[in-house]
Structure formats: structure tokens, C-alpha cells
Length: 113
Length: 113
DNA sequence: CACTATTGTAAGTTGACACTTACGTAAGGA
DNA sequence: TCCTTACGTAAGTGTCAACTTACAATAGTG
Image (tube, rainbow over all chains, first blue to last red; front, side, top):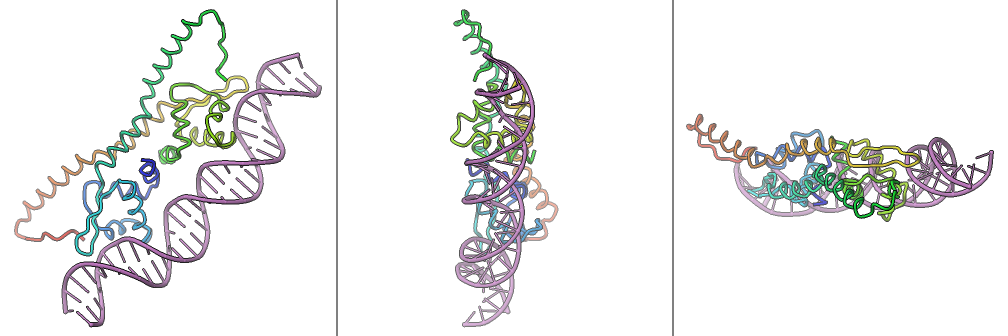
């Protein structure tokens, strides 16, 4: 998951993911879409594979790559823990109110250290 | 958006985001949760702020940080372009079927180069 | 005004990583 | 078998970023 996020932080790898999202493509065809060398793309593909974001399938001398649905789902689930922000904030407000209620003798409105 | 994704690719910064997700905290209090030095955290906070993922509010000598809801929403929207994978794939299948139909004279089932 | 508290900024070091060229490897075809 | 095609791997290079310590800045406090 850590690996998946770091893999997606690179623009070239994101572009690769978009390319093979709906179409299975061999490494060479993928590389031809980028200004960098073919080995560079091969290394990117290894990173994406290790991160669980693409599948590799060998047919003859070719290697076909395609976005791995499960990997994307896992990443999505992981990331969604972050943007319940509004709910978390509401929860914090409620808890703060509860604390104020049970400690109404102290008048301490400092910012927490 | 590029910046936001790169900001989130660092584990320390993700932890910071979790910390200030539901609670506004000063820089020092944030730093005390990590094994690294306080300046390191200060630099991370700068990165997160420039990426639009946290808000900074100055009160006295302190600087209070909190996750920025809008920034998270933008990031989420950007990322969701990636995991319509199943739909995209279905679309590809349909398009492939249409092509097969309009070119039923050629029997070419090679893998695309 | 001195003094402390809270933080950012500067400068330098280290490690990671994206890239290059050169080479190795395995599958088919003539 | 030899050659080509399609690809990964090795080794080296340059850049970037995460970290350190040292210093500067600014707001309150006696």
C-alpha cells in the first residue's frame, strides 16, 4: 500500500496506468508513448507490478500489461481513510462539547500545548 | 494536484495529516509525535501547506495546523479518474466488439503490436 | 528592556530514484 | 542453427528530497 502510493506519485507511472487501464498492451507499445528510453519504462513497469497496480501476462516473446483492478481498489480503500475529514471534525466537536460539560468548573480556553 | 500526490507519498506527512485531521494542533505538538527533529516536521508542514492539504492559522507565537478539506476533495476527485477501471474495461470490450462487427472479413486475432 | 518560548530558515549530508547506455536472455522464423 | 524481435538487468550518473545542526525572527512575560 505504501508501495502503491509511492508508485502513483510519479507522473510517468500515472500515465502508464492510464494507458493500460482499458487496454492490455506490450511493454514496447507502452514505451513508444513516452519520450524516455525503453529500459526506463521497463523499470517503471516493474515498480508498478511490485506495487500490485498492474498485471503481467506473457504471450510468446511479449509481455502484456494491464491495470490491476484489485490493486486500485485496495489503494482506494486505504486513501479513503483520509477524507472522512468532515465527519471526523464533527466527531471532534462533539467530544469537545462532552469534555466541556464534564469539566465545567475549570475555565481553561488555552490552545492545547 | 501533482504536488498533493507527491506530498501524500511520504509516510511522515500522511501521519501528520491523520493527526491534524480532526484536531487543530500547533507545530510543536505535532513534532512531539515523531522521532525526527522539529525542523524536519516544520519542513513537512510547509510541503503540505504548499500542496493545499493543510491550513495554517497564527495565534500569538503559535501556528495551528489542520487538514484542509477542500484540498482533500480535489485530490480525491483527481484520483477517482483512475479507478473507473471496470467501466473503462467494459467500454473497451464493447468497442472491440463493434470493430469486429464492422470488419468481419479479416480474421486477424494477433495481439496488437 | 532582557529573557524565554515557539517557530521558520540556512546550509550541508546522505540516500533514493529516474534516467542513460551496454549487455544478457528467451522465443520464433528463415 | 543463425538471426531477429522483444524484453529485462547491470552499472553508472545526476538530481531531488528528507534529514541534521546551527541560526534568525517574532510574540509574550518578568
